Length: 315
Figure (cartoon, rainbow, N blue to C red):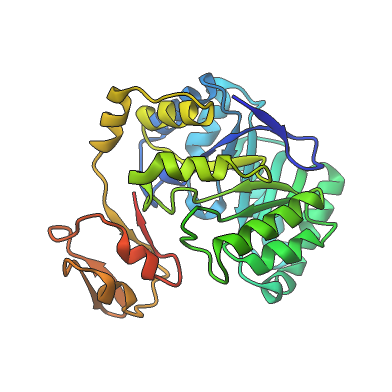
């Protein structure tokens, strides 16, 4: 496993970051012990970096994993809080829930524009203060937009940027893949720590996993890449892929045979674009949001490309 220093933070992270959203109630909803065991399996194979968020509601399995397989793991979390007091509460909640005095990386969650960054300034001020006090080691932002990557690149107070990046540009709200790569390169050259997200397009590129990973691993501007994992087979396959090794046929088959479903996030606005894109009649708008007929859904993922809010994922 390759390790990189995350920009100027002096935090060393594995090239593969365990995206833990998949473990919690918003996706696989695995038992706490099972989630912790999967994290520990990844740690055994060289992963030392975990990505989470207050919104994911999955601190318990991470806390258990930290106790079972080492407290020297690097943990990044995030909060939607936009006030000083709100962010203070989020940081204290994370410290208590994870049983950690210091959180490695704490970020403003899903910043959408320069205006969003301005509106969250109070929260960022608390993170700056918390870093000065040694409560957190690095500040950051996560985003699905090119605009925020470019803005954060110019902000001395931002240490880490967590942008969406995949070879098809799924989920990038305001530009092309090329635009995002250029923005990431600029931030990287400014000394920011960069770790990408959604390299598999929220599960929509799972059938093209090899091509998807080759793309992000070929970008020299990414110190690490967060990938959601919910089974031992996925962990083994992803570690091998990130180490440039072939994945055994049995592991590939196990991943292909995993039962998956189409997930439509709560923030769906019911625009209907996915309904028009679906060729199987599996989607319709009910009560102002898209719903899935699982008997018709072919898990092709085409609908996700039509969604302007990145609401549709395969989990």
